[in-house]
Length: 224
Ligand SMILES: [Ca+2]
Ligand SMILES: [Ca+2]
Ligand SMILES: [Ca+2]
Ligand SMILES: [Ca+2]
Image (cartoon, rainbow, N blue to C red; front, side, top):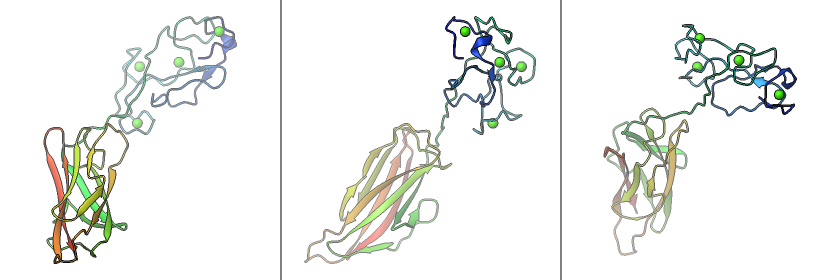
């Protein structure tokens, strides 16, 4: 609440209950107008919809056996107004936690077209051909098995048996709770000399989880 008259107490002069907040705890809520933030009992918003659904657990502050919504009263100490409720409340703050699988999904695309992924049988024939001296740009997307971020501290490595790689070919997964996978970009250059004959190179994207589980995706590119 905002102590608008500066007397270190909640009193009627400080304003009435502000009920247009979801009380989910996902946001640090500070009142933008006189009054106090009126909170329901604290609950765990399992489906992140900012609504207390019937199957979500809650802290039963008043031991009533049921979930109490906002009560229109100021629940906290130093209350002298006509809207005083409980003398304390559960202070809460919510944070999304992602539990990642050790196995990773990997897909590689070129020019916006997916070439291969590690959920289906890989191709034993070349997926692309690169002229001598030219480069091709590849994007790879990776996630855990639920399309969430892979485990933090996983390592990501891109290798090729022939040709020159550049870009994000060695990376470390940082902590993240974004609701999606992550992408990297690399180029493969056909650095064969004029005297060389065309050759196939095998490119591999490999992800190693902190527990040592390796997920990888290999594909063949012809260096003309
Ligand atoms: Ca006051
Ligand atoms: Ca919910
Ligand atoms: Ca209750
Ligand atoms: Ca209240």
